[in-house]
Length: 329
Image 1 (cartoon, one colour):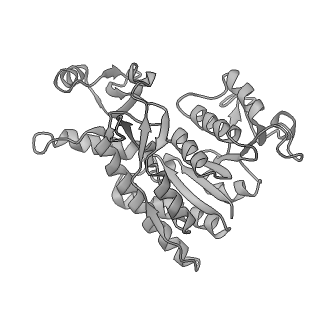
Image 2 (image 1 turned 60 degrees about the horizontal axis):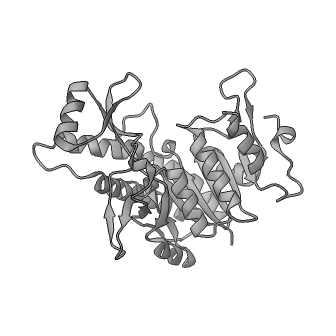
């Protein structure tokens, strides 16, 4: 049975035009679960990861609004809250959709800690904006009272910025492996995982940081020895010359070709670049691995090779040539 890690983008749980209510999140989780159920029904062993940007932002906003009534929770705790909330919605929805197609398969969420290096250079230069926008006056107050690092964000206001370190180790990896080996669908490393550091005794301690969910998904896929990493996002595939008259979707592409496009500056750091980097890292980590980047709605077609961007190593499949000649979009 092939093992897949499916990384869900933010559109899997929240639509920009909808109010961010629990009801809407559950509704969107059920739509997402319908697509996931079809993958599972295809005979794949599946681990699911997801983002948590909007959800953890709202949790932090609620903490700030209620600070005069109850002490706000630190970021690692907020991350755990978001993992539990999102995991609950996905596992409930997926269990329902699996039963609808006549499958009984247990689904479980693992609240996942991800170890980072406390000497990671990201801690020296926090750059990841989190939480709500503030006025300059409010930002300076937070800097003084809480020691937050606040930066102006694209003329939209001031936001707190935190480090985004590289994931080094998934603390609950053995639990996740055992669940998968027991034919349980696992939801793990939500939002990139709860960032923790490890002391010399092996004890874990939460830190104020945000781990990129695509990099964490790659780490999980590597540790699980997955055959495929599927990154589901808002678009059908990776494009070069995005937004220009000569925009072109990439079909089948090798890591070498994708790295060339990256050097040419085709992928934006805030959107497609982390996904491209994650796919390259996973595919290059072991011979025979493959990554697919496509939309949630076309996940099944992506698995069948009909749509999306399929990333392999050079020479992995004789039937696959580079996308410069294989696919004109």
